[in-house]
Length: 119
Image (cartoon, rainbow, N blue to C red; front, side, top):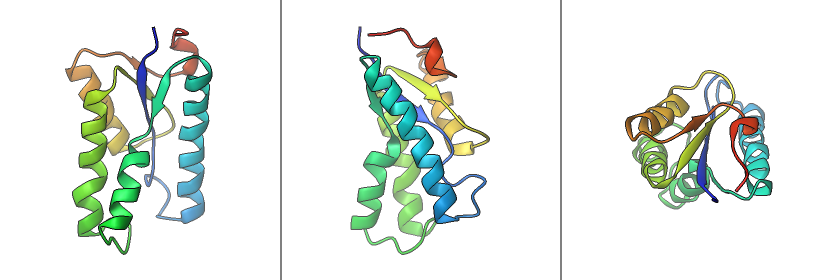
């Protein structure tokens, strides 16, 4: 059965807000998403939903009030709609918050694409 799986990993954590390091974090999440897609699942990143909204809402810098009012709240709503979570990468309070949503909801949390059954 195909699952909608949230890929949760660091976005800003450990980057010092360096755009190249943030881009590398996004790339890692998108590579994981591609592996999920190829296994027959529907991958989701909270960033895919939040970032366009943040831009449209007029955020001028990562972490400003507009950013904070959208980034994690959107990701949390997306997480609650997903069937499972794939946690990748290093330390991240935000990604750990996503994992907690799945644990609280009794939904699976995977730590590797190798753990995820094909659809």
